[in-house]
Image 1 (cartoon, rainbow, N blue to C red):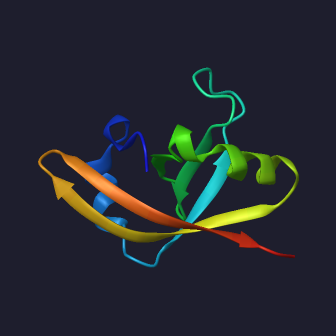
Image 2: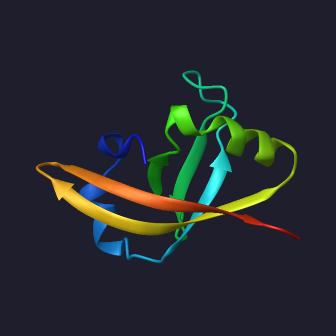
Length: 93
């Protein structure tokens, strides 16, 4: 997960439980990345973004109407920075 240092991560971190579902939403108004995908907690808290070097295929799938979601794999503090890993899934409907 990219951008965790730009959100109130100390407030969000206690709610992050391995296996918890994460909501993925395209951020079409992002001026830094045309393919940006927001990662939100189920409660709607902004966690960060899919890293830019990994978002192209996922963004194209989402733009084509595919439903993607994620699950929290792990979290680990490195000083003041929280490393968060997720696994992305395609929900075939």
